[in-house]
Image 1 (cartoon, rainbow, N blue to C red):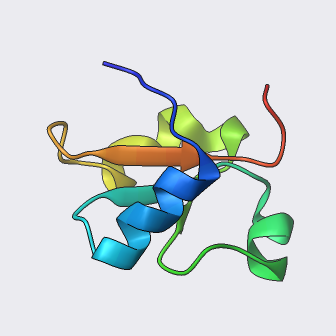
Image 2: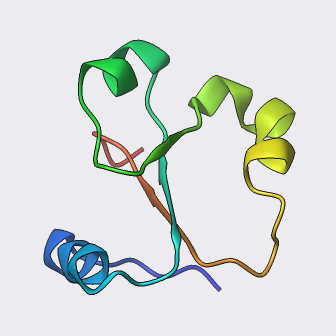
Length: 70
């Protein structure tokens, strides 16, 4: 199931220490410049190649964010 959460909801999840994976889908340069604490970088052009390694638990809750809504 795919759901959208707000920035405030994400902040609440982080503040509570919820168990989830935070994935940032921008280019590595943008990730290294600034990213949320604990975020994993998964560049959009490498999803098929590296997602299985970075996200092996198919039952895990995953929150994905990027700078633009595409």
